[in-house]
Image (cartoon, rainbow, N blue to C red; front, side, top):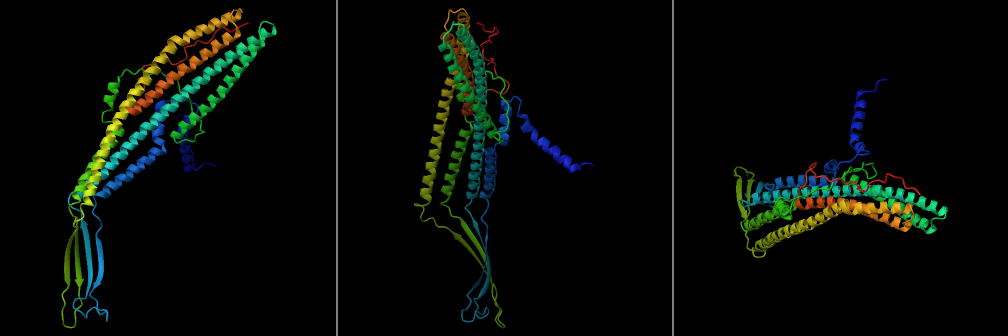
Length: 446
């Protein structure tokens, strides 16, 4: 039996909808792709967009006139008979009243509401910067965890080989049991570290999924090779880049502008709003007496006789808020400039340490281990020295990867501090981040 076309189309649409989730499972994940996915699907960002849309509608309401008041009534009805034609002044009335704010007030209210929209738009940009930074931090931490796991497994295999050699030497009377016990303890430490790293890897993948609005337990690939970024830019250049374009600065500047508009509005509160009312009164004729209807008009204004305790206090309040916002802007600028200096120092330190490990410390530690292996084979080096050399190299390899990932994480924080990407995607100056320790090609023998 042929399947109906709607069922086929539904099944096809369902498969297509599943493709983005499936593609994250086993593939190498790219940083720019998962950031785009987070910015597209993050519920917190969607909530901010909805808040902006709500404020935008509120701005449209701010300049609108208040609704007019329609009234119906009876006037001067005699209570003894309730006859509507008994008294000449008895009327059935209909009236309408409209309030008109003093000229300029509605425009200022609209501008204030629009400033509030601008502030929320900058909140959205601040949130985007934060999401991108957090995604980068988790991405680089995941890379480090994977590399640490890889290095730990490699050292575990090497330590297992050392243990076999120690056991062989002990069995023929050329070694001591203490060497075996020491190797077993170090091996247990590595196994414990592997368990811890696997748990951390799962936690980091769950965090990345969380930011992308995916179930935390869904499969996610692993980062490819990370390159150490070369950032040839000074603190002064970074601070100049900051300028007035950082979303946080723009948000506070919008607040200053909004408070200044509020100050103008507070000053206009001295000028009264106007209430205009029109009323029509219909009278009943009495016998042959023709009673004409009445029409009334009225203008009402507020008298600001309490201006010292109302309008005057309001002006002082808003003036203080303008000063508060201006001081907040100075503090934020100072804080961002300080953060740039601090992060640049950390980046330089991590960069220098990574190069030092790559070009100096790790090659020297590798040579020391190779020498210890050769010496141990001919009984010129004891097992403890061999083990200490292997542990030292393991520690340096981990610290090397830590320096690289710390540098990239600090770069991500720097981009948040500056408010824009310092390095565009694909324009990295690359230094291979693979461990420079060559794999021991020659099998260690007794």
